[in-house]
Amino acid sequence: MFKMHWAAIGCALLALSVRPAVSSAQGEKKPDPTLREVLLANWTDIGEKVVKLAEEFPEDKYDFRPVPEVRTFADQLRHVAFWNLFVQKTARGEKIDPAQNELPKAEYPTKAKIVAALKSTLADATAELKKEAESPIARRARLWITFTEHSGEHYGQLVVYYRLNGIVPPASRSSGD
Image (tube, rainbow, N blue to C red; front, side, top):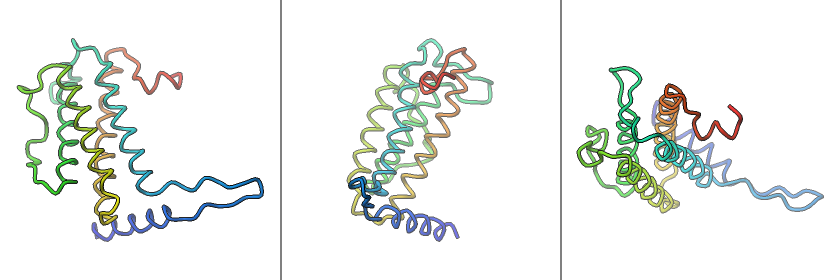
């Protein structure tokens, strides 16, 4: 059922991505974006939002956790960076142990190292995903959608850390929130 669900989504998205441009009496309409363009835009949008949160959150609050049972802000970011690395390696066909689940705190103890890791893992994963235009569409779509959603979930969690510290998240500032 799971495989069939993803295959159906992939086929539907593929059909939407290959629709021809529509002509109008007023001129040519820009063609609809391809599936690859839509996935890439969503992937980079959420990745850049997480990086911006990491860059702007005060370093002295990186060890903040809302309650004892949850990760610190820094732990959340090391977790996202690890899964960016997972996407990169998976796209290359390399194995990586998902049990690790986050980058080691000993190697990424500071805000500067964490932000650098987020930026580099996002850039590397994005570069690998961009290469995959010729890959089977369902496999590639599943990878992009799953980890775009994963980053979005953590973005939402990180916004709570901002709010609990009396800081308006970067994406909310432009909307007047």
